[in-house]
Image 1: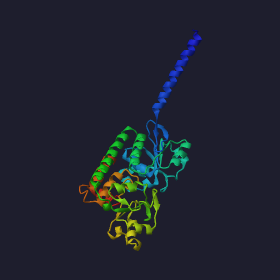
Image 2: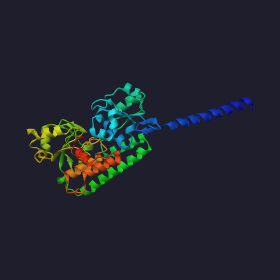
Image 3: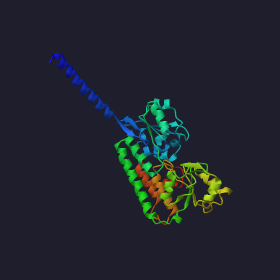
Image 4: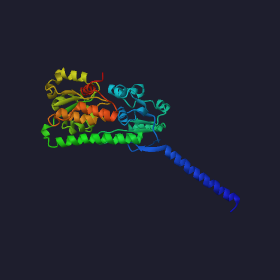
Length: 350
């Protein structure tokens, strides 16, 4: 073999080895995570900069210990007092979406912020950002299993330590659901009260059949008063429909529930509703996110509602204690008993 051929083979082998090493190095610096729509998104090996435009998922990131990675959030999260109580730095994190509309964002502004990943609640919004060269993950869910999977996917984005925290949370949530299932197993259907849940400042906006709200009602031993009337996730109903449903309980699941409750209690239109006549109109607790709405604190929501509807079946559940234990275990935050009681009453921290 000629010297020239030997040299060619030598340099060829060296180039191949270099290419393999370079490819291995590149692979070590990146990884892929499948979002809730099944799209594989390539991320840095260690994600350090997150813009989270889905309000509810900001809570998931907090629970998983990743809040320090947030460089962008939503206007909704910045307006939640209990989130700021647990994580004061959120006041300094820029809101990249305004109001309650997570789709209200500027792709150029996001690109300039150089995030490692952006978390979105809309599949089309995520695709819009990916077309702009931004790593974007689509996250959404409508039920308990979807909540658990969202927690797991978010944990994969954050890393191994977050994945351990995710499984700890899921085990806690599952244990609460198991407790309710066992105690409510022999509950007669006629003893399951009807619940009308209000989702905003408009008392006629509620949730329908395909909703996590229907699932927590049923898990806690109740039924959605609007079941069968609203097939989709949410809708606006008429006063006549509420009167026909005649719910046993009304739960106001909005960040500022007190004005809505006062409106209902003082309105002649609502006076004949069973829940109003019996004084069963309640503010849903709001923590780092609204318990009732696509929240990790759904694990507390089911206990609270079960205790509310069936106190004789759950005399041992102390919700003040549950809140304090939850916040200590999952947010590393020691709430006082008085703070837990304020949260339980639907009030903001002092």
